[in-house]
Image (cartoon, rainbow, N blue to C red; front, top):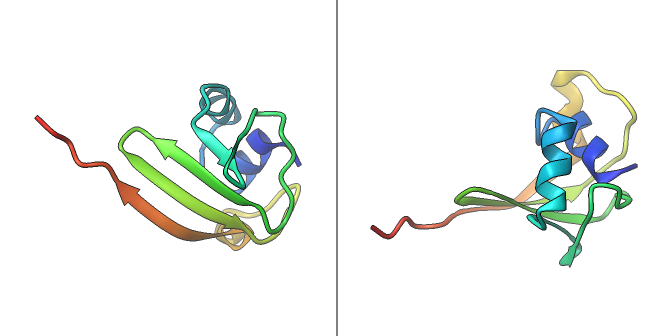
Length: 88
């Protein structure tokens, strides 16, 4: 499955267009390699996503074309979540 579609279906990112934009800016890594929105995601991959001052690392558990909101969290497991400190 494409990276941008996985992020939308799993509800890590709400809109596919936003997922595409973030990936194209180089803010997403698949297995520690820069990823484009068209990169393929398979079960077992590790995604590192940078949202502003938050960095989230998730492991892909399963790939599903469509899912209910209540079951979307089964598609991945959050491994690490860190926040950058704001230095003023």
